[in-house]
Image (cartoon, rainbow, N blue to C red):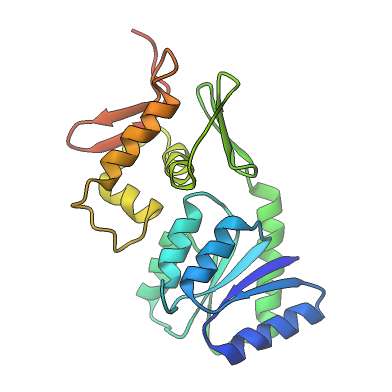
Length: 225
């Protein structure tokens, strides 16, 4: 089992690394949100243990950026036992929650459950019409032609594809592709949508990425008129 532990408390991080390694797991450590986000996006892990309170970038922001492109199972650690905090994390895409202090044996059992669930249900491709998004290879194709996308464009496309047929507001897109504190008054979303549309629609006969005036954007196949 390949695991990423993102935890800023050094004693807890080392405790988890040693305990999981003794169980035969391969463990990477990150002690802040920025490093954790980089590893989570660049490397395929079986499961991620993610602390909610992190320096640089908090756990919710890391989770949201991860969910834009990957379905890696995530268990969040928190010192807060408030229901609203757990609900916020689950809505952001956490698969499980564990409150500190916790039993290592309980954590290990939960990790095994999450990895079994992930292997059983995780999809590796998303299709929207003739557009194919390969989540593992992080590549996109249309009419069998490879579409050259930046990392952020791929993240944006994946978010829209996971919600195909749903109108996504600028705020929702900003929170999922960038982070929860993103300034939605900026035109970054519009610029990113324009660049993505130029790559996935402009070279082809039919459009998949549509603007819904006053509401947002939707990725879907529409019948020809």
